[in-house]
Image 1 (cartoon, rainbow, N blue to C red):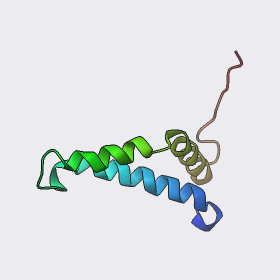
Image 2: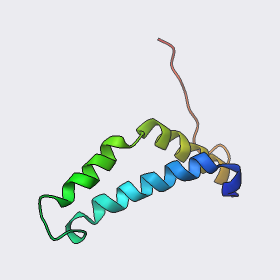
Image 3: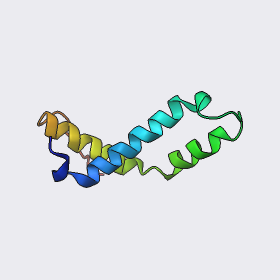
Image 4: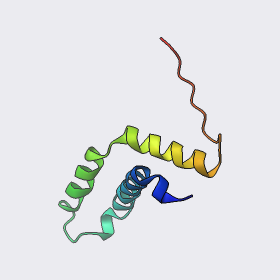
Length: 75
């Protein structure tokens, strides 16, 4: 996969990965038990989850075409 073709998706997926890493390593990233959670929670709240889902689906379908199929039900 050539990330130059998907620069926006790359940024979104990197942001998602950074959020995951921050959550996993909360206890090792700070000396202060209380303050270490603020930046991780702020970043999680700022995360655009729909953009993350869309970028992940696009990435997966580029790597393996047709891997994720969407069905939208009309109401």
